[in-house]
Every structure is written in C-alpha cells, then in structure tokens.
Image 1 (cartoon, rainbow over the protein chains, first blue to last red):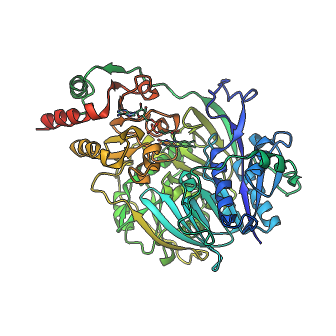
Image 2 (cartoon, chains in turn blue, orange; image 1 turned 60 degrees about the vertical axis):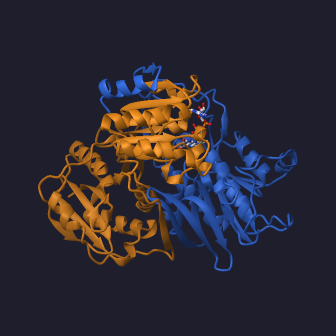
Image 3 (cartoon, rainbow over the protein chains, first blue to last red; image 1 turned 180 degrees about the horizontal axis):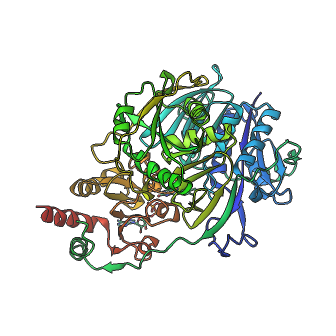
Length: 274
Length: 321
Ligand SMILES: Cc1cc2nc3c(=O)[nH]c(=O)nc-3n(C[C@H](O)[C@H](O)[C@H](O)COP(=O)(O)OP(=O)(O)OC[C@H]3O[C@@H](n4cnc5c(N)ncnc54)[C@H](O)[C@@H]3O)c2cc1C
C-alpha cells in the first residue's frame, strides 16, 4: 500500500503574546499547539487516502513524524486522533536542532519507512523558515511540489498533479512519485484534494477536520515508535545560531479622521501621497 | 576566489525587476565580507545576459548556464544548476530575492551542499549575521550562519533595487548536467492584469471580508486605477473567491511595502499585518472602530465602505483632474 509520511511540529500558541528576554524569547510558560500548516498537511494526506463511499477501504497508510521531546507529544496524539495510522517521534529538543539536521532526520525516516510521499506544511508559524520540504527533496533526490493549493493523485501513473501558488499565479506541475509536497493554506478548501476514487463533485468540509472523541480514544492505542537523532545517524552541525531576538520597531501613532473629505485632504497635503 | 553569487530570474530575455533588491542585499553581504559580487543567469539560452552585463549592478562578473531543461523553471533542474555553479565558481554566499522561484529552489540546493540558509532577510548585520522576521513579523531574529557556503533569500520590500553601474564581463559555464527528475510543468495560470505587480506597486488598495462579494470590488478597482496602483486582498476575501488567490497580502501571501496602502473592510489580523506593515502611509477604512487595523494606520476612518468609497473615488478624481 502507498505510504505517506507527514511531518508535524508543535509551536508556541501564536495567539499568545511573545515574551522578549533581551537575547531571545522566553518559552518556559508557553502553551504548545500544533502548527496550523501541519494540520493542513495531515488533512491533505487523509483526503488522499480516503474513499468517501467506502470508509473501510483506505488508499494509503499515513505516518506522522514529529521531532520533539518525547514527553511533549500532545500534538502527536491530536494528529493520530484526526485519523493518521501511526506515529514516529524522534526524541530531541527541536529548538536545539538546525534546519539542516531536522531535514536530514526527516529524509532518513522517509527512506527507512520506504514512503511514496512526504507531505509537509509550507512553513511553521513560529520559525517561518519555509525550507524543510525543499531540503528533504534535495537530500533524497526526489521531485518536489511546494506551496501546493490543489492536488490530483493519478494512481494509474503513480504521479501527482499539483497546483502551486507562485508569485505570478498558479503553476500546474506533474511529479512522479516518490516525491515531496509542501502544502499552502488553500489545500483545505472543500474541493482541493482529489484521489481519482472519490466522486469528482465530492466536497470535503472546509478546513482541517477536528478530532472526534472516538478518534482520541483510538489515538491512544495507535503505535508510536520513538527514535533518537543518533539512531538515524544525524548529528547537529549548528549551521544557524541565534544572536538575538528583538521586538520590531512600532509604527508611530496615527490619527482618526471624521470624514472622507478630511481623509483626502490630509492624504494630499500632509502625507503627500495623492 | 571566493565570491557572493546572486541567482537571477529572466523573462522574455530580460531581467525580472523583482531580482534587483536581492542584488542589493548581496552587495551589502559582499562588502561586509570584502568579496566580489557575481551574478548567475539560468535559462534555455543566455540571451538575457548581455543586457544584464551591460548594466553590471555592481557585479564583477556575470555567469550563464544555458540548458533547455532550465525552462520552464523547475526547482529540480535549477537546484542542480545552482549546486554546479556554486562549486565551479567557488561561491561562499549564494542567494537572491525571496521570490516563489528562489524560495523553491535555493533550500533544495542548500541541502545538497549541506549549507545553512537564512530566509526572508530584512537586514544585513554583518557578513554572516542577518535579520529576519519570525512569528508573523512579531519578532526580529538576528541569525548567524556558519559554514563554508551559506545561502540567503532577501525580502524584496526591504532593500532598494540595485542600480546599474559599470559593465561586467560574461562567461558561460559549460557541461552542466541538470535533471528535472521526470517532472513536467503543464503551465502557469497567470492572473491577467494591466496593473503593476503587487510587490512593485507604489500604491496598494486591498479589500477584505467586509466587501462581501467579488462584484463589490469594482469600486476598489476604480480607486486602484485612479491611483495607478495594484489591487490586494485579505485571505478571507481570497478564500471566499472574491478575487484571485495571488492578490492575497500577508504572512502567506505577498509582502508589500508601498508608499500608500489602503485597507478597506479588513480587520487587521496579525497575519495580514505581517504583509503590509512596512508600508509608508497606511489608510484604514472599517465600520468597526475597534478593529486592530487602526492600530497600524496613519489615517483611520470609521465608516462603511458603501458610504465612504464612492465619495473617496469622486474626490480623488476631482484632484487628479
Ligand atoms: C497560518 C495562517 C496564515 C494566514 N495568512 C494570512 C495572510 O497571508 N493574509 C491574510 O490577510 N490573512 C491571513 N490569515 C488569516 C487571518 O488570520 C484573518 O483571518 C484574515 O486576515 C481576516 O481577513 P479580513 O480582515 O478580510 O476578515 P475579517 O477578520 O472577518 O474582517 C472583516 C472586517 O470587515 C469589516 N467590515 C464588515 N463590513 C464592512 C463594511 N460594510 N464596511 C466597512 N467595513 C466592514 C469588519 O468590521 C471587519 O473588521 C492567516 C491565518 C492563518 C492561521
């Protein structure tokens, strides 16, 4: 059966305000939540694997992979509860690993598991690197389709046709499997993912699915392998290091205007932009 | 000799304008390291190189790799070409503007060379330390890269476009194997528009969910065209299909920093602000006086767009005569 590896990450709740320490960010008391883009990546895999007319049939096995301290894996449970089949945890403090090491770990797991697709979120909301999918593809020598907004799985030809959001519009790219896909936000719109089995007019619910109570119970019984970076032969090379983290300069306070007339007058004479 | 190498994009035999800020960022890094700046032109042929070399942009040399497999762009073939050029030229810093093209292929090339990459650089602190926004622009990270080769992408809105200078010599890199690994680019669905590109426009007029439907964007388009600007939108408006997805401004859309940004019926979510708060003058029109967009606006007007916009268009028209 087709195997899909989905990478998932925990991030500090993006709705909480940041605590600056001077040299970095204080993360000691943050609430950890799943990275939204990874929820979209898992949702993409679930939609590829699902036969909506036959819930018993499954077109792919979905493995979720997270690099995180073994004891902090609530996000993993949540992704298993959404419907992923099993998990792999690489026990490490992800904040201490650089992007190159993270990518090597993912590539090695993909190889060891013999997967057909790696699906990643386009970026993590905290670090915003937007590199991991591309790097994993480079390390494996596989094709890549980044910033995917729509996916068609052509099972007969063992390929994906991907709509990628690029600066000029939307690019349609066909890639043979095995391959790496990084997903953008619109991949969770109701008709964005098609697997050739579900009816062409099938519409999924908008957005990533929520874990059901039954899903949460079942997640506790799903298999989660725990490995270490050393098991996978990866040592960190500290190619990136943090020198400091600062608050961006704020904007000068603005003014409220009462009427459109006043607005246009000020834009013309004060701001001189008309 | 070691050098700083900028990867350029061309279209129709010409340099694409969005590459110029990337050259400017590379020049700062080159100066900080005391290294020469070099430019790399990839494509099916090298026809764009002569014009680029004539303008020079402060570079000591322009290098070309001509191969039919490099057009249309694929990250696979470009990744191979960039790896080859980096090695054969002995480049120690490789980068360019953070366009969707370079964001796709540079991390791939960096991984093959086992090199670190700093993405979306907004300031060059020294030859190896760069500033980039994290957490939707709520913090600025100063990141130091170490290694024999390092990569970067520079945020186009944060660097002045590089200016033409003395001409630079052109040389071809031959015998490069590139492999598209079986991928096929079926085509690009471009959003046709006679307006300037969002990331290059002097004025951006954006609409949000409060516009309710696509046809209501007409009045925003009128204002946009009067001001010679580009049309933008929030994610809520693009997701609802009111306007095409490539008009989205924000963390996951375009990053813009025009002279004038007008946000209409946009609440000002942190992810939207991440894409426009570098604008020089920000105008917000929203019916809700509590909307967070007013906190970054230079001029705020609490009003329904239905009431305010037609008059706005009229008054601007009158001024423009
Ligand atoms: C990971 C992630 C990435 C994201 N990336 C982006 C991004 O790149 N860009 C982006 O924009 N969003 C992004 N978002 C979404 C963002 O969080 C907000 O949901 C979105 O920006 C809201 O769009 P909006 O302001 O148009 O809609 P709303 O928040 O619904 O605001 C609508 C506004 O319109 C006003 N309004 C309504 N009717 C009228 C009227 N008649 N006249 C005047 N005003 C009116 C209302 O008062 C309200 O303030 C992202 C979200 C996530 C989770």
